[in-house]
Length: 296
Image 1 (cartoon, rainbow, N blue to C red):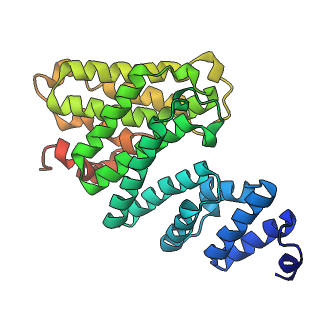
Image 2: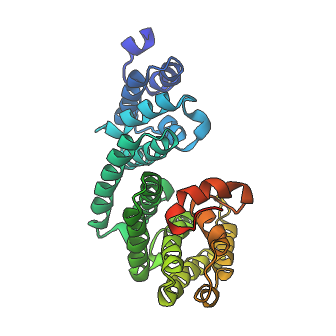
């Protein structure tokens, strides 16, 4: 603190004091110094790790929520960091079953959707990964789908699938920064799978065909040779293959005769998880209860 009094704008001092403030759970002071570090030197290294490395976050859910609410409310930090803080808040609200916070965060994210959709540069954005607005939009829609599912707002949940499907029908994925488009694969396919689920539920063969076509398009895009050397840690190609396998085993010609819940278990699991495991099913069946027959 004595160093800080003498050199209040020194990047080394600010970078050293922020982790100490975090360790003391003094999040207001820590965020203030994160702002100073950004404004005075353009550094966001600690903030980036805080947002995108779970090991850096406070272990206590309430403390974590308080921290990211401070970041989201900051008018001094770069917009994309504040927006990703909102997404983190959404998942924390779900984890704590905080329904008022879920509703409030959903409203905030819907406003962000409108802001992004009104920006003509979103679907040709060439910014990298976390700063890419197209990738951010997909992340926001994914968070909204989870919020609406947790809130039991099925109409709103289905609207996410409809809106993302309309977007994918008119967007050239190759016009977006390639690495960002590739890293959007899993969340994009999760949102598109909502339309497949709805088609299965309504036994709408044409809607099912279109939903499968969109999923195939994203699958094929992420398998382009230009992504062979991608540094992404997540297995986007593996997920894309598994998602296509899920719709392939849920063949519309079969459920138009006799629709069985088992046909859709793989698909609804991938909307939430990264791979299909039967142990997830009891909880996932509860989440998708409106689409499924009551368990016997």
